Length: 245
Image (cartoon, rainbow, N blue to C red; front, top):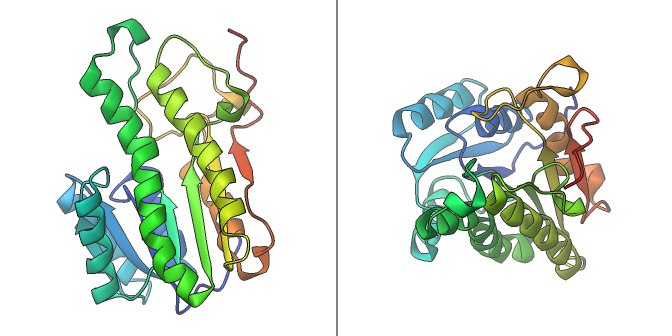
């Protein structure tokens, strides 16, 4: 396991009560960062994750917010700043999906998938950059989806593919826009993680990704020595090759 030195840094991971987000929070706490565990509805699970992080000897809080709402995002960051300080490391992990055929997706579902994956990533990144640009140091890591940048899609889960392709585009744009600010912006893109509710028929390499597989990429990107690496997307997919559509 990579061991970057994040002592003195403040990390916010969206959607981190459970699953991959939880693994990200605990890994950053192990690296010495004070951590904010974000949740929308899973308050008890977020509190438990924050307690686990505190057991690592860092400061931690659980904060609830709807990160698709600009006012709620402002409140989220204000709470983190008051309790822990300005956010140095932001991991945009929140994102719903819609596994049904695209023609069965209603308007509310379409908006929910795009907003939780793409709009939330934009809103949180924009707010985090306020303090990052002041301190001239920051790490933003967005969670994408394997093959999104190759525009490989299917009729099922289509809004998710659209949103995650947007996340990769946003990552590359923001990397260029922050190149003189001491900030890096990168993406970690899994295929299927074992904590997911969606399971295709075959797993690459005989298993689904474990959250720790994604943690490896995250820790590389947040490391102090990775300051020249920005605009990159690491696909943590076991070598999965999607079928052509």
